[in-house]
Length: 170
Image 1 (cartoon, one colour):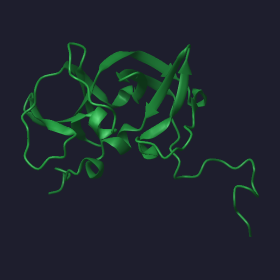
Image 2 (cartoon, one colour; image 1 turned 60 degrees about the horizontal axis):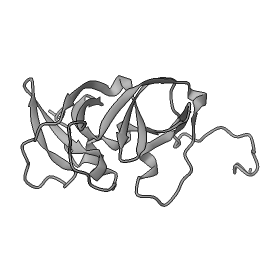
Image 3 (cartoon, helix red, strand yellow; image 1 turned 180 degrees about the vertical axis):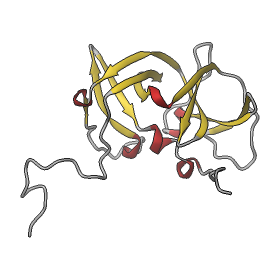
Image 4 (cartoon, helix red, strand yellow; image 1 turned 90 degrees about the horizontal axis):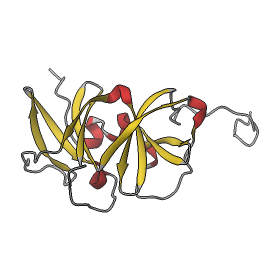
């Protein structure tokens, strides 16, 4: 029995493809591009403060900060996504995220606003041999004249992707 997509032109996306959910998304800027992340992952937004550098950490992990008794690794999203480096300024912020029970900070150029996107508004992103791994992109969405790149923060900030061990092992 032939089960290829060519034989089933109206087939549904495979389980491997990430399907975007309807909901609210925080928009942020990295360079000239605008990205959107699921607002349910966002714990808080803080101004950038220099973290304590950790030995043997990947270059994109800037260090750690103590956030009300929780040690939080701080990831420079530009470096993680292989984008050009930029000097931090007064608009640079850290988005504190909760991904699978792990608190992690993401340094971004700025945050813009919160938008509501329907699942139908988020279109699959074309797959290129690009600097940003396709696993990290959920899709693309137009909001007025703006094109948003919807990010999969679960994949991007997972313990395995960050090279961290889960602290929940006991």
